[in-house]
Image 1: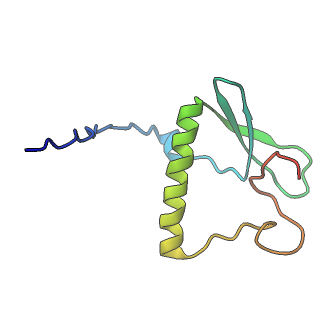
Image 2: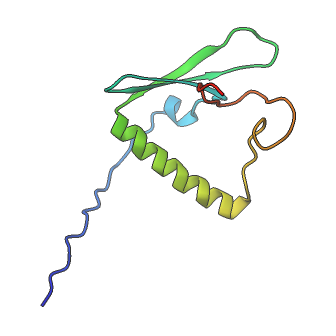
Length: 108
């Protein structure tokens, strides 16, 4: 008789959303920096014609949590595109100048 491998235990987590946090924060730009022990994501809004922007949220995460976030985002993007069609990223999917948006800081 063979033994079944142990199944992961699913933990139920109850989240509390205070009114301000439940509203959410809109961001169309993120600056990402990292050290050996953490990633820092600064979420901002850039408005056309305005030379200055403001950071509305800073999220500091361990590299392991960032990797888990990446995998969760990839999974959710696949589900979204299956339901609604491909997401167009301006400046990458089309010819012509790119617009405001999340961009890699890596050089070409």
